Amino acid sequence: MMIRIALVVALATPACSNRTESAPVHEKDTPLARKWIAAGAVVIDVRSREEYAGDHVDRAVNIPVDELAGRIGEVQTLARKDQQIVVYCASGNRAAKAQRVLGAEGYTQVVNGGGVDSLK
Image (tube, rainbow, N blue to C red; front, side, top):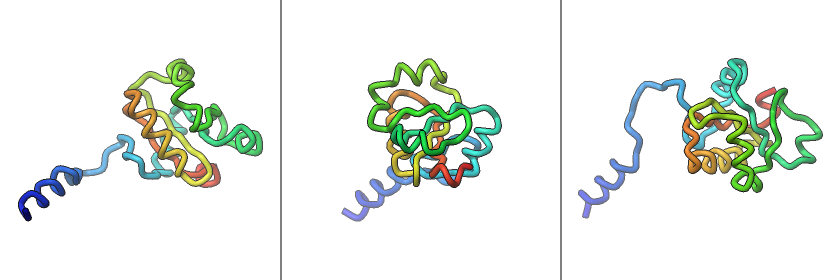
């Protein structure tokens, strides 16, 4: 039984490695997001239209997280599947959900930028 548990933990735990410039999985990484934005990444604000209207990051396109799967065609016009994409919201929680949605659609370079105030 202990061997099974150890095997499950080992398989579920990511291997240790040096950090690269690839996107973290579902963790906020505001410094990397800022770097990608400065380099021209596609920026998607996944907050509501009202929140976006109040304030947003320059060049950000507003696609609320609850609409993201249904508007994936719009994302396809913005970015290739291997292109850097920054998603953000108010705190990073909705951005994590958006990151999962985009990952499931085959987008490989998606970073959770956290909250709008952190990115500005």
